[in-house]
Length: 155
DNA sequence: GCCAACGTTGGC
DNA sequence: GCCAACGTTGGC
Image (cartoon, rainbow, N blue to C red):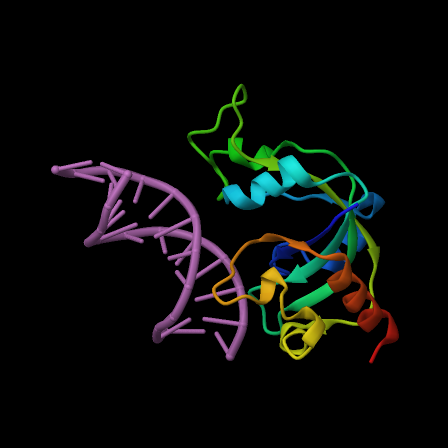
């Protein structure tokens, strides 16, 4: 059992969108970074915990808790020549990019990035490191516990 | 919109 | 394999 932080632009897919989806589950598509892809491919397992993070928006932060709901499979958007995630170098025989399914579990209070930066127990989070841009990053058990307590306590 | 930081590409 | 140029991310 591992823990992850996954960034989504809420204009594209928000945590509420996942809650509203059939089975509270959506495909995590559009990852086009090898390090993030390799986390999905090599390390993620069904049932792993996910901090669902909203990026590129007015108040970035953790919007909810989710879990990994499938193993890795080819990201369909890489084959769509009309879409913005099209990759001309990917083929159905040799896909380059993958998705996993993500299921929303729990919506607590919104935890803004600016507040996360004030929490000493989170200072080593990959997300908070200078220049960090990874769309999927590992979270330690201690960081996970700290954030869940914050979200559930509502303080 | 700005810009720092990082990733990718491609010439050599 | 180096590295400059370019593109992208994402907070502010």
